[in-house]
Length: 438
Image 1: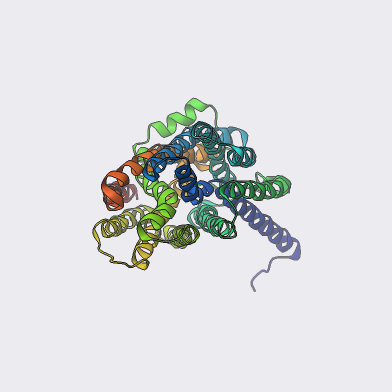
Image 2: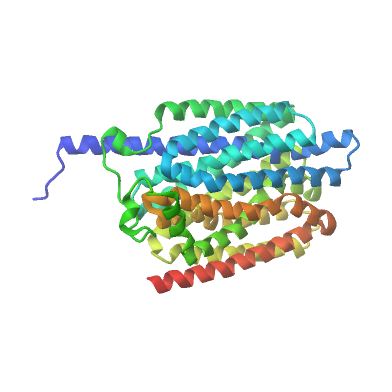
């Protein structure tokens, strides 16, 4: 006769599952709050361009200046990613997560009160620098709460924070704009909402299940640190960085991250402006339609997360290569297609690009970082992969603005199609490595 678990065993396991679910909810909600204080600039860009126009600045010039602010913000975010990873590995993910929220609140309020390009630039860079701490903190916490067999699924769920959270943030802010709130009010409301989420995380979020009396699940035994990957804290910064520096496949993943992040940052920043200036939507409607990008990206992440866990060692690499190839085809259609007066077709194509590329993107600083780093170096792996990606993402601001001003939106999409195609080729190289390793 099969032995059934006793009530003494069942109750603690149920309690552990509840705590783990609470941890996921807090991280998803908290990081979604980060995006209220990040997507506010993209949503407010048409309003800022209009305000600058009243001061005698031509719309194209305003677009380039604001694009430069966004680029410098991405640069600050990329630079912050380098130390944020190893800080989380040495000091704990919870501290990173909470400090990033607090800093973002401060700078978002300051931006809402500021005026002039120099101060806007300084404050926005400060905001992105503070926000660079958040994701690495979440990866570190996840490495201690979840088993390697579910990394893809778990990180897919956590990635909903920057996808569905981004979509909900844009929808919320479009409602605020539609209700007559100016861009300064939008920034202040975003900061206040993140403040409430910070309070909830401060009270309830735990670093590890050991704090409530449960053992930690195992790390991936194939991590770059091997058996040492089960340790919570690295021996030294030199050994930590040296392990990643000697891995060629790790830097190939960083290269893939660079290409996909260029695409993601470009669409995150410029989608509302493209819908307004080229497609002909109103500012509020453009903000609402831009929410489709992270929304369908979230669906992509869930599908990719489950498939990646089920397909085995080369599954994630195959999905990356195929997804980026599909994104390249869709971007060529955006660049060279003829849509007449249709407002629907461009919106649909942009949404399909999100579905093709966001699942692959979510692997890089998520499940793949956990695979590389184990419990010891997962946050550092995530930080390095993200940092390399966002160094490329700097091009999404002023560089893409300059291309789109000179060659039109179609020229900009053609350039992005080339980036997607190159990312697909790099993904094929990663797949080849994973197949040989298996």
